[in-house]
Length: 412
Image (tube, rainbow, N blue to C red; front, side, top):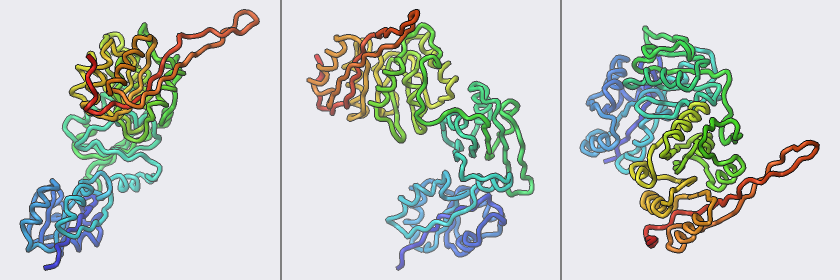
């Protein structure tokens, strides 16, 4: 018997007008139709039929259905919009490759459809979905002139409006598309100032324009741009070297331990794809991090109040760790990181020789590997009458290393 053929089909908006002819033929000719109930009912309304129907969208369950029924030689699996745009088809390709031949049939995405209706291009826009997922969309909206946002989830409308207000993005221009391609299709215009939670009920797609986007990826921040208070802060020259030593790139998870004002956490979060945890025990510092997070629209920063290493245990494993303050618990913090993510990149700042002693002992015991220690001495020129004189700041040690393996001996 020939191997079964599964076609993963993007059904567009779900109307006959937005189904491609190839998609229609694949459904009509199939022995078995699989998809979420909403997808199946959509193609049935469009006049497409199949012999057997299964309401399922989980990749492993779809694989079980196909392997349990060798009589099905032509299988159609349905997805909304386009299979290459926030679609479960990506996982299904891998799940089915051993049991059948797999082919994809693209559809019209809701973003492409709305762009056509609004007479705007989408190749220069950021594409994002928060349908059934959590995303740091404030960072994206604040830094891109054009964004298409797939929406849909209980309570998301209220949360969206609240966050737009919290981060001061009231100048956004927002077009809301609902029931696209259907007879009751509506496209409503709002601003960030007047949008309401009820505007966002159900499955909608948003086109958002930001007339004044903030600077994007990897931009440095001057010290005087941060809200400071009386909390110590890593100065901008030291911050620049420390961030460089972290070697951040792509998607990463950073712990900022002893975050202070959040200057490292906020600067790191200016990289798109960042997820940052700012760990801080002092109430005043926590409030300053919250204020700076709002000011720079870095909603990828999650504030964790408490003392490391205790509060690190329930966080996702880090790829990178910055330690600005360890309160004498450096060994315990590094042990925790080793357990969660051996090999993670660690950078720490120290102003005392006692901390450097802890670093060298951690290296000796195998907790830190490939240790590099540099000392930075920063001086700033000040004008005194007709002269400029340099005033030196306290020298600081910048240590970079990797978290050792699980066999590193414990520090006694």
